Image (cartoon, rainbow, N blue to C red; front, top):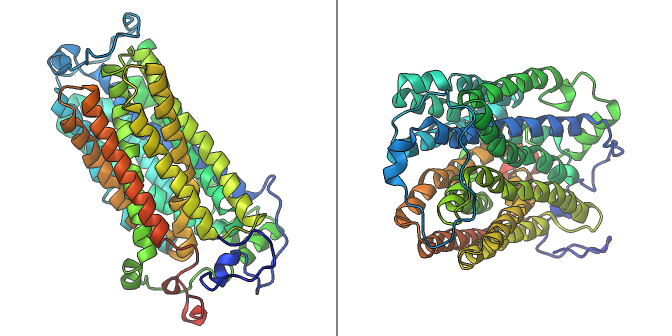
Length: 495
């Protein structure tokens, strides 16, 4: 870590470019105000975009409970008897007009998992296209396509399970381009010393989308029927698309209403960080150890994230034995904590860099360590407190909340090491990080055939061990400065 005292010379191992991303050898424009700025408007709009994105992703997991005939799944019921019932008797749904389907547990697993088979395909292509043509239209149409497909979910379900699986895979194709496209846009819009704040605001929408959509989908099913879950969120997605196309531009240079001061501030802060190379340096990129450090961290973090996202409702229902209504709200609480942590950690990370002169790599490493080892500790602890359901919920909430620190750690390190190719890098890392969403819950299910506390302890231990390994690997091999291969030849002096 660099000394927080300004003016001290950097140590031999530190890069000049990492002292502060606002290069000291380049003339800097005056910092543009935050209030009413275009760059923060972009952060807010993308926040709502990712809110919609995750609402469209997770609403099926709630609606599916109401879509399936309860008699079909009764044989699969493996509710643990180790813990006492903590809930009152389940209330009868006010509205049961939605059609029910004879889908067993295996079929439901295929339906829920089909999203990831589309999602993993478009990660790298999405990053590449965004680096060439910009991310605005790619992200916008990615979310629009997902929203439109969501509107057709009831029709697809009527056609049969095959049609629904194909539809969900198509939704995954649309969502797969969104994160790489957003990273590509931020490479042109985020001043390096505001990078953590802007990106944490932007991507925190995903967590809040989970928080709101889980209980809201349950309420819609309770008072209306499951078809309205898809109609509601699909229409919200279309409304967001109209605002996005109207108000957003790919770069500061093409924005209609940006002030001259803000445009010059962004341009000068990114000077000498962006490359004008026409071709993508694929070979040196794929040989870059700092990139693989992000890959390992991203994969490791997502293992526990997707395991909890998919199976936390099951754990609360089958082990802690909450009723459906309590389960919906309590399943959302951890993601509210994560959302809050993302926002605050983004502010803290940029404050450490701008005011205390901490190096970029120091901040990325520390925040990744907190955001990966902290959740591992509390995840394991949650498995060893038995049937103390209040403590279990508290530990799982703390575990997921601390994961929010990673939003200012490895999650945005792509922009530190290669801002010109950040969308492609995120496409690469997110491709690997999608694998846990496909196999993690399957492995967890296979390890918990009887739904006992001891079986779930094994699931939590595995997720925690993977998290710790990823944190250590990232700490050892990550970098905080722009890499040589990501710069023009004329900037080759920067190492």
